[in-house]
Image (cartoon, rainbow, N blue to C red; front, side, top):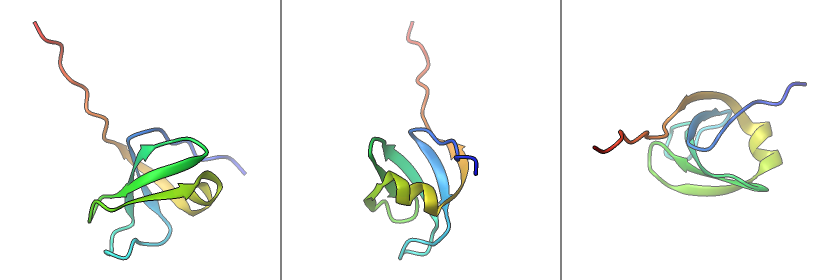
Amino acid sequence: MERKQFELWDVVQMKKPHPCGTNEMEIIRMGMDIRVKCVGCQHSVLIPRQKFEKNMKKVLRNTKQITPPTE
């Protein structure tokens, strides 16, 4: 089975919704564990990487803000 590719600041769709009702999470920290923030209520949760990969459905978009160069 192919591993799903995701990066820091991606918004991902999870298989099960968060208690607030949305299933979209933004990745805010990566390592052995992954910290995600709920797009709906802004609650953050630390999830072991293996469990996160198992419960992630797909990557929806990248929210990383690119700042324009200053003159």
